[in-house]
Image 1: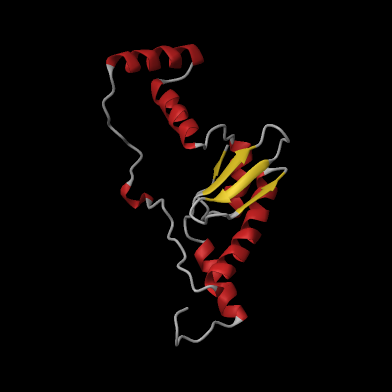
Image 2: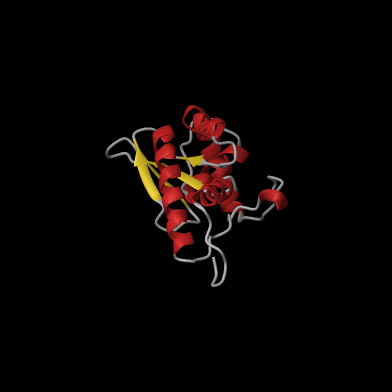
Length: 154
């Protein structure tokens, strides 16, 4: 809120925050192999992190943390970042060139893993992006409960 603007009531602020969190922010869930739980963050909100023993618990705690994070940003009059992932221009198809030796190595590795080249490249890219090792059982409860999340799990 800028100078001269009326301050929001608590109810207006709650609704405003609720509406913000409906946007497709990148929620990242990373399995911590040492203690077995999950670290959770909203990529666009620096320092907005929490953890839980399950993805669902981490997601629930992350939402509470995100509300507090947003309240602090609003109180300080700072700008709330927009979601990074505007997928409206993405159709899921990418065409790119690679050296023949990388193509050959990828084909061989995919065969060793018993998967298609497409699935192998998708897995390798996901791993590089820090969103790998998601299982349907880990992601589905989060996504069904919060359809606007666009959440990722590791």
